[in-house]
Image 1 (tube, one colour):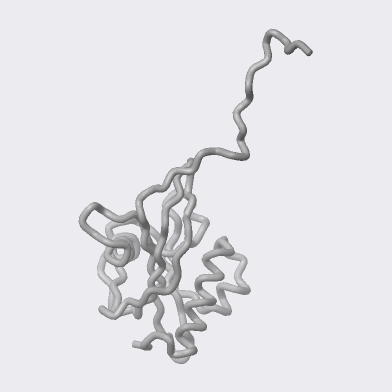
Image 2 (cartoon, helix red, strand yellow):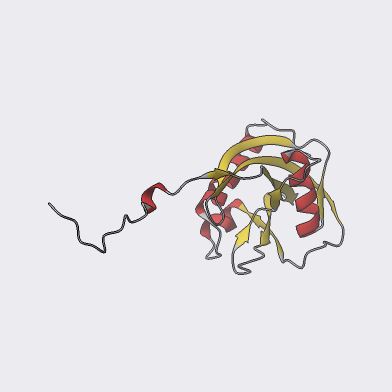
Length: 159
């Protein structure tokens, strides 16, 4: 059997090489408004109609916890009480072939300063997040449900 002269091996798009990127940290910040548990969400830099958790890649001199706290301060101006708890780990693929190991932390709201980045911030209850027509990705909704359960179970210190 002969092959056509113009036969070329096509790249196998199902097996695109994956490269490990820099570690990331994200922070779920919560507070109470009256008796209502609320979570901090920020508008996405690239897609302002989408709400996301604050966070980003580590710098050479920091771990994922420090990156999560720094990015939250830069993106929202919100800082947390010093006792930030580890909540979850997952692999984050934003764009391209890199996958970033991401650690999510949970921290209680302690105050606000002027943020460095011009983003909208929202404090939403879990009920608002679940019933809302806002563009909040399913993985973030899942993480917020986990955070609410951890707080209810007193697995983390409230306040």
